[in-house]
Length: 251
Ligand SMILES: [Zn+2]
Image (tube, rainbow, N blue to C red; front, side, top):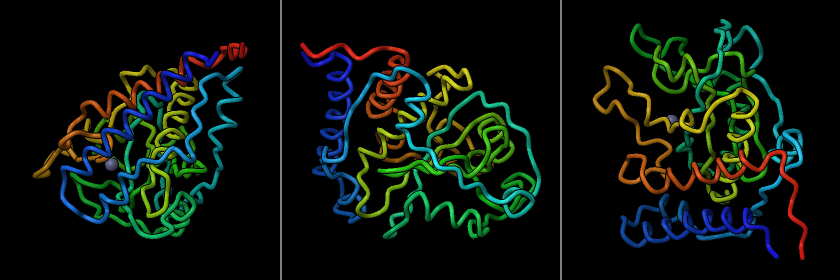
């Protein structure tokens, strides 16, 4: 017998794949969209039972590669008590723009932003985790604020930030699933409820013409949280609920 939890997760991933495949038919022929909507399950291996939080963490495959202290986006330490998890996507479609490549750019201070009183506070973009099909690279400790969402707003002040990679050749569904697992792990670790898992869209950027960013664009419907976002939350919740459960034996 196949465990029920496996089926549910598998169904959620399948539903996302179908939604994307429909979007592909009805949206423009933009070449990035073509790459973003492949219906592939090849590298997606849904598993939804973890004997411990440690086991989930191991499966997520987090590699620490911090921005050096005292430079670039870590010039000042800004304390964070994580109360939310904010999900982004890089919108960097360049070949090889994987999690390690983003880590290198962050460490070398390449991701500059215009510093201003009501805008970016430090002159750099920073976030906590980059995820691709095979790895999560961590750039900041979880007790330090990043600069990724809404300037001096609650998104930056109170949330952990996850960026999903979407470069050419990357398996997007596998990336989303790894992100769902990482999110579930962080929820347990920092006692964060599912309704505090939000897309970047959630945090208005006060003063901008489009305050609500269409991010992560491939998990939003017409630029807003809708069906795809709900499916993602279901995936997260499935992993969250499965920690501490034993896999039902195969009969
Ligand atoms: Zn974003």
